[in-house]
View 1 (cartoon, helix red, strand yellow):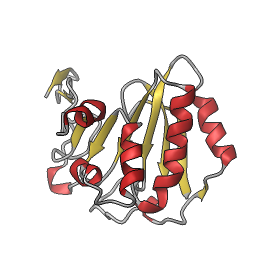
View 2: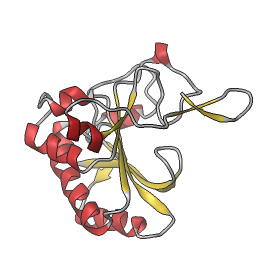
View 3: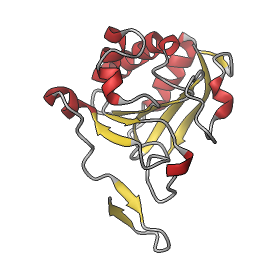
View 4: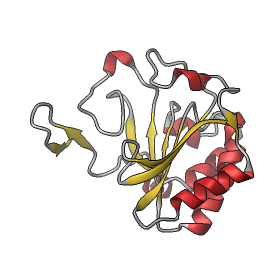
Length: 186
């Protein structure tokens, strides 16, 4: 697996200060994607054990709320095994921190075994707290939305969804009130 970049103090891709890993490779090719260069699986640099340790070390600060996985596409079959290893190492070291993951796939397809190796995709989901799912749709772009680019995308509470067997949206999904700068529940 290759990765495009690592942001060690990211406040845009989940709640709180996060370490964000942007992986390479995506077949969704969403119109006006913000990270088009990461569509190429060969983009960036190889992900190594040294890079994984760099990420885990960056997470080892009290002010860091957790890890965010983005792309490219974290759930592309070529990325699943490597990211599952990172997620397991993350959970072993930081059981109280959260994982946010952004994917163009629908949660139901991931859960239903329709993407990559069903067992690996399920194991990844079991380590993720919040999943922002769905392709970015230019025609549904909404700059007032927080943590997502278009209104078709869902912010999913993964542990609750797995426990009850149906999609549970994260409580407290916020929308920025345009003009006032206030944040309100959507």
